[in-house]
Length: 410
Image (tube, rainbow, N blue to C red):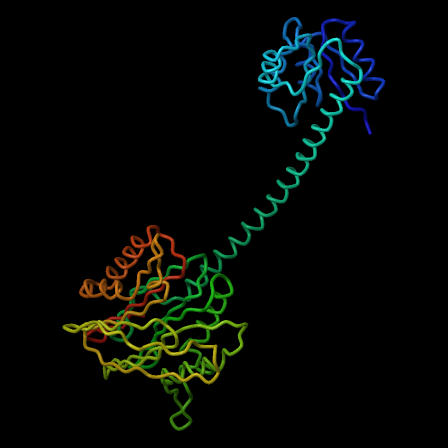
């Protein structure tokens, strides 16, 4: 191990030689200079951690040397010991304010100098240890940043994939116009929704919400969106092959939810809530099944808003759960609003919830507005209530409007 370097600055050769001899005897490597200017030149080209300087020197004094060293930019700490014949309190305060760490009073005591230098070495050892740990932390932080950027990129890709599973915006299927909003609380959501044509007269739709948040919930929501595909006729829970006709019959909503509950028992303690419904565009009949999901709202001309259903058990919790079918009829211009619990459980700064009553009031006052404006206004209303544009939970909205004439745009 190489000897510790000490820079010794004193314009008096005799006064300088005495401490230099002691220090060399103790194993230190000594660089001697005659004033503060020379000391600065040496420090500019060599890495020296400990400087012992006389207070009174020509060109650059010891006190000025302290100030210049402290003002300079360096990748390591320099421990400064000022040698002085002054012992007054005011002088010591001036030296410390200039950046001195310690003092030696002339005539210098050999043992006192040894103690002061060793104290300086301990400080420098601590500084080097901290510098090494900081270096290690910087490397760790850089690795974490790289990993975070990779994870963020993966989550953005997953978000893009999830968004592509959603239906086309502002579409009309048979004579059912639809509009939706999808606001994940993070990159990906445990919510998912869809509306689709099942046959030449029936439209299916759903909005579901997986328990929990983040990637695990999103993975199950994506799985469910793949399961709930009407074109997967050989295994779709929405259609059943009829051997008598050779065609696929549409499965009633309660049976679809029942079959989902049987299929998703014991899936890592995850469960989900869902509204699954069917609309017959010829008979204007609406049937839907509620499984632990917030009750949809039927908006009809000249009538009070109707909350459909009163709960039902979530899917995936209890194997023997029973599910009911809710029936309703509609006329042209009537609407149906589905939403996730992130809407009514949206909390403001005081912790008060947005609530079903506030949602009903909003829908009642905007019932004649076009669907896009109605949903955009609801988003804005929730942001105002929340006090910010970010939500704690996923927010999903699906609004359906029953049209007079069939005008399909898929």
